[in-house]
Structures are given as structure tokens and as C-alpha cells.
Length: 117
Length: 150
Figure 1 (cartoon, rainbow over the protein chains, first blue to last red):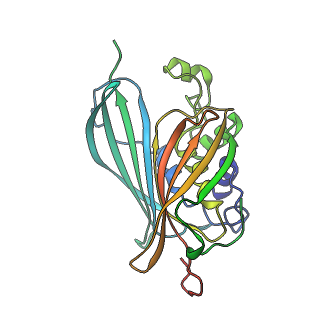
Figure 2: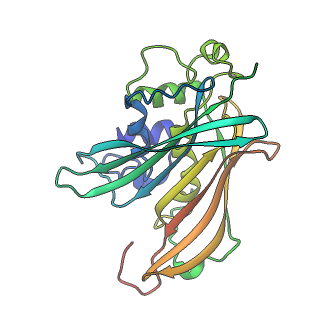
Figure 3: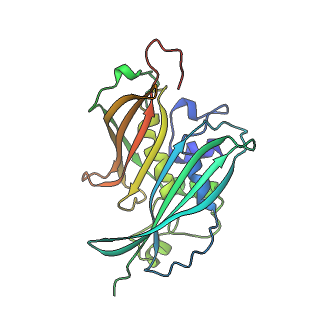
């Protein structure tokens, strides 16, 4: 996983490649991509797009680490811009080790734009 | 990418990060998508047709992959920098097989609760200078003579 992440993102820093490598400090952002989230019945606009993502790194991830993640809906809010109304939903995932030590917090923001008529 | 070491005292406001030149290929995206276990069916990330059918201009690079790539303007800065936070906004879609530059600039430095902390703006731009992904990073450096390793 760590090697694959480094390879596909083109990482060349020595500490993040090789068999004894540390994980990229943003590796946990990838784990949230395969998550199935509950349907929040958001009936607005068309295709949803990834609007932004933030990560707080609290401790390093190494080869062999076991991580668990818990995701919750943090907020849903509306913004109006030049292109019309947009609805944002923000999900927060907390990654921790089995002993409870928190490793990282990841916040993902998705946007749905008003459908053009 | 630099494997040199830098210390908090070496960093100045206005210091430039990068540029790092990147072209992201379909093969890279396929490999990345496979890592999260979603390689079975064509998607907006791996198929031009699916992307166009969804109203996009063409296949795009996943946001999570853009984070992994843009983070390298920090992780490649020097061998001992620690990326503490990265907060990105996706303003425009990042396409396959297009030349992009990863850049950054130091915007602040201070010692917060004893931790030597540096703030940076980071972004990914195209050849026209349009910033497609923008954000802020908080990084930590060791101080010269300090035994504390961040």
C-alpha cells in the first residue's frame, strides 16, 4: 500500500519509498475514497464533485501499522456564487490505532451545483 | 526533490517552494484507483467516455491523488520537514496528460507553544498559470542545536 501510493503519485523523497519507508503524510486521505457513506437524502443539483480535503497529521504511519477509521457527517451548508447555488457536505474521518492513539483527521468536502436548465 | 536538511532558522517569509513539474498519466491514475479497490468498472477517473457522459470535459485525476501529488511540494522541500496539516480546495478539474506545476511560498513562521511552525500557500497550476488546486500547509522544522526532533 505504502509503496503503491508512492509509485502512483510519483513520490521520490527517499523516506517515503522503499521497503522500510514511512507512509506519505497524506496517505490517510486515500483510505476515505473507498468508503460507502450513508445516504443523507440530499436532493439537489446534478453531479457531485470533490470540492476540497484537509488532513491533520498527528503521528507517523509505518509499514505494518493497523489503522481504523470512523467517519461522520460534520456539516451541510449552502453557498451562492456566480454560477448559482451550491450545496456542500463535509465528512470527517478520524483514523486511529487499535490502542486508540489518533493518527490523522481527514475532512472531505463535496459540492453539488445547481442544475442548469 | 532535495534530501538536504533545513532548520527553522533557514526558512524565510517569501521563500519559494518548487516548482515541481508533473504530467499525470492514465496508467498512474489506474494504479491509484486500484489501491482503493475501485478498478473494476470504468469511471470518470479512468474512462474518457464515462467522464464525458457525466458532463465532464474528459477523464480527471482523483482529488485524493491530487493531494498526494501536491503534498510533494512540501515533502520534497528537504529531508527533515514534517507536514502537519494540508488543506486544499479543488477549483478546477485536473486532467490526464497535461503539464502542471506544483508551487508554494512561505507565508508565516513562528514558534507556537514551543513548536517551530511554518505556514505555506501551495498550489497546482497549468502552463497558463491558472491555479487548479490551492491550499495551505502547516509544516514543522527542527531548530538548530535542538535535540527535539519534530
